[in-house]
Image 1: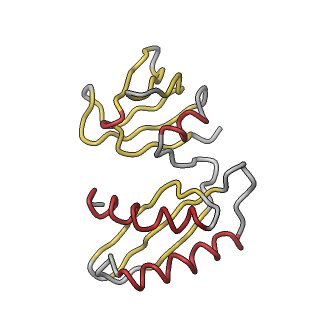
Image 2: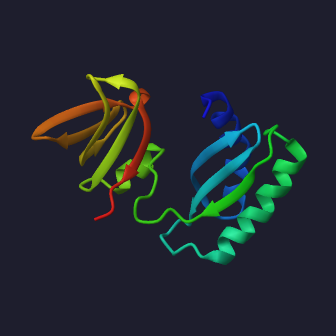
Image 3: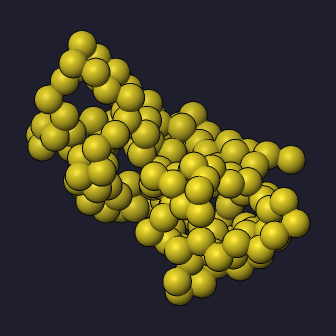
Length: 153
């Protein structure tokens, strides 16, 4: 997914999702010229479970916005989902909520010679995160993290 398109969709959709009382955890794009999928992961502040009615409400609101703004020029299917046990982590607060748990990181390019890293999240701070993996403590800057997910236990 092109970073510019991702950020543009995030700026467009996040306020709409928040206005409905949900957090937009992540956007995944799997688009080709002949079709594809736009997948939104939503959660509810306070940790009440997200259900089918919640996903339908967000889908209706977002579909209208996407139809008006038309930011995606190819055919696609919109999916709205709860995060599940392997929830995506995008913002600093997402990481702070899961300190002590196991996370999986995918880097933008290589970092310290690695494309991925899985380990226990020790801390989330201003500069980045600290993760223990393979018996070593790594301090990963925010700008290096491409994708992150909680590892279901």
